[in-house]
Image (cartoon, rainbow, N blue to C red):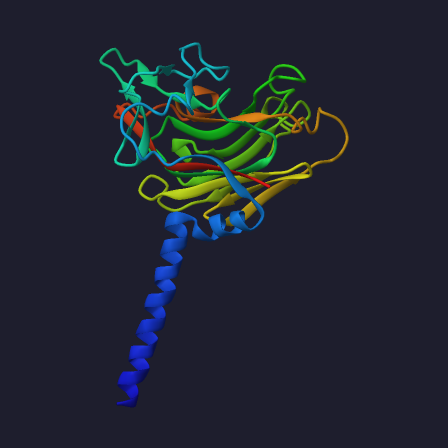
Length: 273
C-alpha cells in the first residue's frame, strides 16, 4: 500500500507540474499576470469576429517596391492575404502561377499609437526557407528623420532558413544593421510554426525589454546621450507582416517548393502604466 501511495503522489505531482508548464507556454499567463500588476490594458484585438481585420484598428501598407530590403512580395488588402476566422487573424503569403508573391502588412498607425507600454502578441509563425515574418514597431511621426534616425523596435523577427531562432532588435542612427552596430539578441523557441507563443516588448523611458512566453531574454538601456542612440521618446505604432526573400529573409534563397506561408495571431494587447 505504501508503494502505491508514493506512486500516486508522484504521478499527481508530475501531472500538476507538466500542466503548469504547458499552460504557461501556451498562453503566456505568467507574462499577462505580471503586466496587470503595473499596467492597464489600453488597446487590444482578440479577433473575436470574422472577415476583414477590424478597420477601426488596422490599416494596410500596400505595394511591391521592395520595402527597402529587396523583398519580393506585393502587399495587398485582399482577404486572400489577411482575414479573421475562428478567433485568429491569419496573414498569408501566396505565390501565383507567375512565381510572384503577395502578402499583407497590417499597421495600427493612426488607430493605435503609443509612447511607452507593454506590447504582447500571441502568434504562430510560418516555416520555410525564404519567409521573413515580423512583429514590430515604427515611429508614427518621423521626428528625427527617415529610417533609422527615428528608430525601429523589432518585437519578433524570424527568418525561415534559421528555423526556431527568434530575434529582438532595435535600430537607430547609431545602432543599425547597415553599419553593423545594431543591438539585439536571438533566442531559440521550440515549434514556432506549430505552437502559439507570446512575443512581447516592454518599453519605458529608460529601457526596452524583450520576452517570450513571459521570460525576459534581452534588454537595452537608454544611454542618455542623444536621439542618435535613443529616439524612443516619441509615439510608435505596431506592424504585423510576412515578407518573402529580401536582404535577410532571402540570404539562402527561397524554397522552390514553397507556395504559401501563414502567420496566425491569436491576440494583440497593449498595456500602459
